Image (cartoon, rainbow, N blue to C red):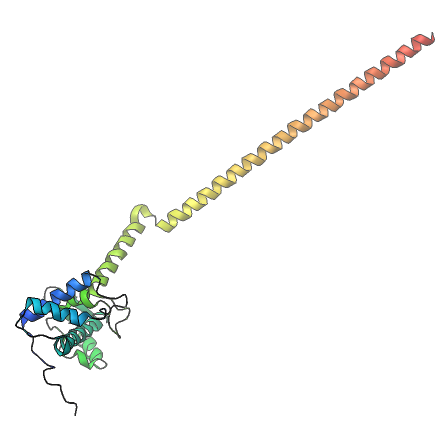
Amino acid sequence: MKRIKKGSRRAWTKEEEEALLNILEEMVARGFRADCGQLKPGANRHIEEQLAKLLPNAGLKASPHVESKMKKLKNNYGVVLDMLNTSGFGWNDGKKCVEVDSDEAWQSYMQHHKNAEGWRNKPFPIYERLAYIFGKDRATGKGAETPIDMIENENENNLEAESEIGEGLSPMSMDQGQTKSSKRKRATSTDLLVGSLEKIACVFQDVMEKSNQNVNNLVGKLSNESTNSQVVSCC
């Protein structure tokens, strides 16, 4: 049987938990959370120092108190996060709890998620704060949506829908229309250019033909005058 280290478990007061959450929120805002979602090395030691300043008589240490509390908070957050990313489950913002559409959906979920027992309709007022603190930092929650993600995605979908409905045209259809219009303009310009060149060629050909005819007439006239001059001389 696994023995529990003496002093590893401690009941946190509301004041102590509130101080911890405030410290964590400040740390996230200051960039203390890595890109992978986990708090950077030294986080628990920093929390211990800040708790000592806020609650000097609490005696809270990084190990085991902060480590144990952080693990519990993350586990509870993970249970609720998994529930909210399941079809038929939703967050009641007024009651701050997870609601389920039907008993069938709940029973089906419980068959594979024993750790969720007791969490249906259970108030969890700090969930949204934990969503900001932990984000998607869970091994089983990779790619899962937090409440903030859900709201942002819904807003983005609404904006996209409004954009597509606007004037009956979507951005894609507008782009396609502009492309087709550009193609028509390019085609029209090409046709005009070809037509102009053809007209110039015809005019040039006509000028050449008239010039050749004039030259031939002049040559003929000069030839006749030369012949007549020779006849007169013979006489």
